Image (tube, rainbow, N blue to C red; front, side, top):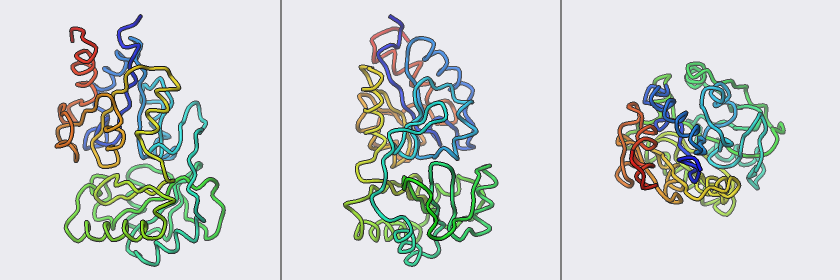
Length: 282
């Protein structure tokens, strides 16, 4: 029996596997290699889509299906499965949100790409900076299974980190949008705050936690260990047998901490925390 045979480790991507600059610390990559070579199952459990992860699948040394769209789909070998579809008419829903909150940047995150509603130059600049592919949404077009739509606040700087800063007015506006959506479709959707100025909307019952447990059952692993930093990670962290958060994470006050994300938080979990869980010498 290999050292980590009993363990499934699922980690968030942005500011958990990566540092604040969106790069993956080499220490994390080396640790993941050590973990999987010794029997552990590793994957990323993220709100990101196939589009925003496409250039990363080959970089991340996962040996289990990726969990995407906040748990709305599994991804393996170029194929999406376990799709959780929002039971609402896509265009009626988006038009209602756009009319109520015209300043927000709305997007459809479909299985085959991202479609931006009324793309502003500042939002396109962010997409271009992140090297994400997009198309302008065509009203009433069928974009396949309705997995997710997202709202981004006004873009002040063309860096993803800008979405992690919010003033009182930003918070109030996002709170109002969340309440608007819940008042109309609370029985149909789940809402996650991927960052202070990003809101993700998914099918009722979707969560990173449910997806992680489903994958654990599929793989037959005894222990679920999870690492995350933000509010949309809470379901995953609460569901885990053992949960950890980078010391600089948004929800760091709620969970046991490891080092800052940029210093290799995932490596800390692999090298220090999991051996302790298993009762073996780190």
